[in-house]
Length: 365
Image 1 (tube, rainbow, N blue to C red):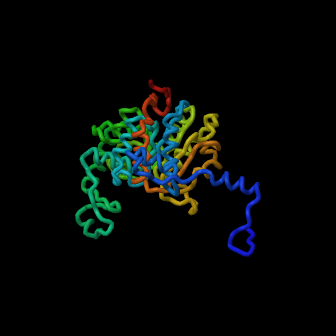
Image 2 (cartoon, helix red, strand yellow):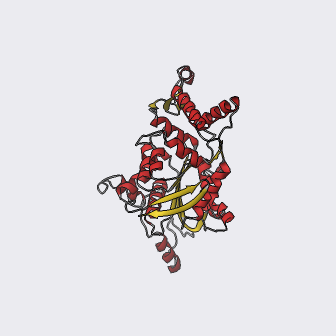
Image 3 (spheres, helix red, strand yellow):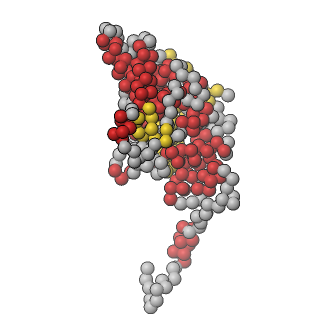
């Protein structure tokens, strides 16, 4: 920019004026509570705001497109992080209940803590400044500012082991095992129960990295001790089963809550479609809410644009990331879809399995 004798820049030529006008055509709109009646309105107003509010608003907008797309993409929900401790159990359960998701891929901790709640366990107010050595003496475990009862954890771990003792000793996918385990609880607020009733498959590719894995290790130990064959959780069978869902879907969409193993697992199922001789083109939609940063190079924070280079997300996909902690971001995105009734009229999928083979996958009216 050239200046003469003052701080006022020289006038732009006509070409630059036109370009400038095109760039400065959309104003940021202030969040105006005189026009906001509920969470849905608030999140919608974020779409015209800035920074992470805009990103969150865009995620909510894309989620709405997933739900209302006439092509009916299969929505795959990835769950990681301390979501149950954060108070999100019913939000996730309601997403399942209202046909907002078709497949769940989760860490073991999320599923276990849902199971723990279904059996009467709870999460309690705590403090990140607590004396953890005193908590240890009382068998209280801390999840940042939340407490859980370790004695109940141990009881529930043992229940899982004893449940596994009753199963036929053979290979199970995590989907099959979790479905069977869900039959032992009957809690209307449970994610596992809602998924069973809605016939939604729940995969846990890192099942052993959780208290469910601890219970299964107890089963393994007792089986070996008694000379019985223990059951086996077959993680490669998980790959085979999930990829069948992908190749039988007209399109797929991904909703990642945090990152971790579930995010990569869902994305890898797109890549594995080649095994069945199909190129899906990648997810038609993808959104993620996370606190992980892209510049460390890890998978959890990697951008959805980066996933396009792998073919996991379609080159023309609608995608957005909001770097907002899930205890805040997930209820807002869900609340927008719920209060704006974006899910209404969305059909559910009916899966029929024969062992590890997906026999049929049909839309129910």
